[in-house]
Image 1 (cartoon, helix red, strand yellow):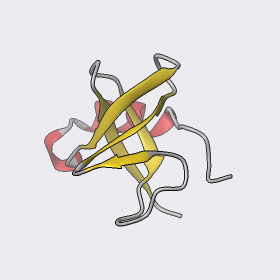
Image 2: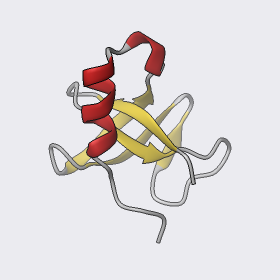
Image 3: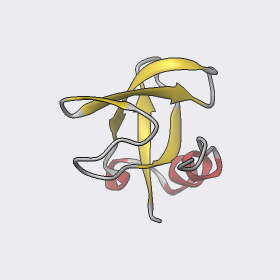
Image 4: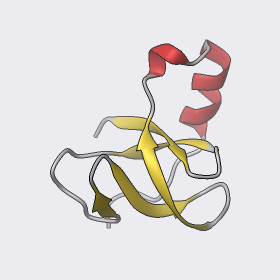
Length: 71
């Protein structure tokens, strides 16, 4: 499955599986989701980030940090 870069409410960037209109490991809250941030190791709101707004280095770093897969 394709992964999407998201930013948690504390500002950390990581990649996750983001399926529109479906949530297997998160609670949908409009255009954000409540899910466990792998950086801060706590539940936080996450919002998708347009990869075009990120530098190549930042995008690559965010893609290396992944949350858990779909159970």
